[in-house]
Amino acid sequence: MPRAPSRTPSVSLAILFCTSLFGQSILTDGLPSAAQPGYSAISQDKLREHLNFLAGEAPQGRGNGQPGLKIAADYLADHYRQIGLATLDKDSSYFQIYELKEARVLYAGLAIEIDLGQGASLIDAYHDNIDFALNARGLTTDRTLSAEVVFVGYGITAPEYGYDDYRGFKVTGKVVLALQGEPRREGDADFFNGLDRSTRHSFSRTKAAVASENGALALLLIPDPRDPDAFREGLRNISRFAGRKFMVLPGFSSAALPVYFIRPAIAERLMAGSRKSLEEAISTLEKQGRPHSFALRKARVRLAYELEVVSHGLQNVVALLPGSDPLLKDEYVVISAHYDHEGIKDDGVIYYGADDNGSGTSALLEIARAFTANSQRPRRSVLFLHISGEERGLLGSRYFAEYPLVPRSSIIANLNIDMVGRNDPDSIYVIGTNMLSWDLHWAGEAAAALVPDLHLSYKYNNRDDPNRFYYRSDHYNFARFNIPVTFYFAGVHEDYHRPTDTPDKINYAKLRKVARLVYLTAWDSANRDERYSLDGLLTE
Image (cartoon, rainbow, N blue to C red; front, side, top):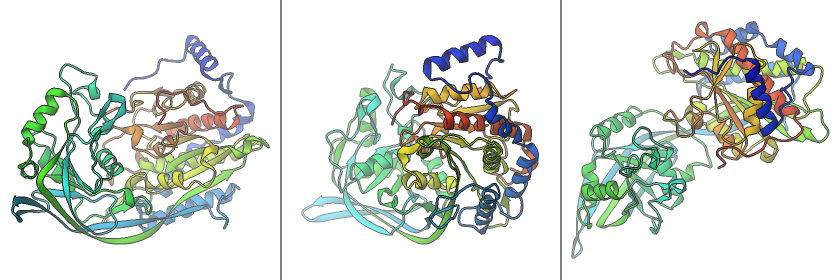
């Protein structure tokens, strides 16, 4: 992985120049004396103590909907009670409670009705897990429907590329048929990032969201025509969740759309009465590189599915350090880390989640203690947010962002810590740092200059990075509301989402350096005169 150059005087001068140009950091002149006690207080021994408990036997992997998660939540709340931080809940609780529903698919059916004319029809029925697979994530109620079908090309709306498969087509109350992947344009390497990597528009969840926004009832997804193994691989990926429970948030399920991943032969059958075959439609799309959508004649699709649904109450853990400035105390810096993991499986195996994300959770506990070690409180208030539901689709952070405990407009930044205890001992990836605010970017650079032997890497700081890390942790739910974010991440490893992710493999010296980096960046955020600018590369 690329390293930042060593910090020579010329690099320090460059940082000074950039911070003066893009927004002065209060850390530019060195570690403020008021922040020194907290910086020194961050301890490897304390980090180890927290992590040994959180990734130990008692919380049993901190699984969502399992007793171990509540054990971990109580541990976090006890810590904040002991160091004297305040609660935001009217009942003096550190918990923000929200409901999750577990939905298991009991039955999924798909049939096509072909109009043969004069009132006659032909019905073809297809088999779950053989001809199609239902991606049920986000669904909470049984449903049966029959509707007309519209072919919408790749099912993409991408203003940045001047591309919209839905332009001029009304799909309200209809089922949409779309290709997996995204369009290419011959000879244009910049069109949808060329052939080497895919953008977010290729994701099935993005296609489903766009279809739902346009009023569609369901999405039938055809395997990527460029990949002969796409159907088999897609069927295997979806089918391995058969019988597994999906976590969804109440209030968001109305936007959830059933997504059927179908065999190409089903698409061919649907298009039999139309002016183009599937092969011809794909060929036209490939040659023109522009939308080619049309209604399918003489065909309707019938869909049905049944679910088993169980509700759970989960909790985010939130603690408050009130600010000292009479005016700025009503603005907030949110430092976050998800504390859930995979939990204990049906076979009794515990997925301990030491790095993911016991490391970030422990760092957040120490950062909070560091702030209380200072005799001088920060000017702005600081929220310490431990998030559940991350492993089920960033649900806890989505709930907090949708139903914040403080006015959303008063949150000036989110610093999110997720998996920071492994890999290169002297380097940490930062993601999103300049997506919304160059001020926050340079504040992070100034903070890093004060932490010995820790270099910032921007390898994944790209919203079109094929790993999609910018979209895969809790900071993204803040960025959706134009709140400047930084995501601290050390990268995946061989123990990622495996029971072997245990505390003995954590580099505690690195973990302390990352905690100090986040602490100093939070100090800048909480004490600067002005809010961070919104002048970054991306504003959504």
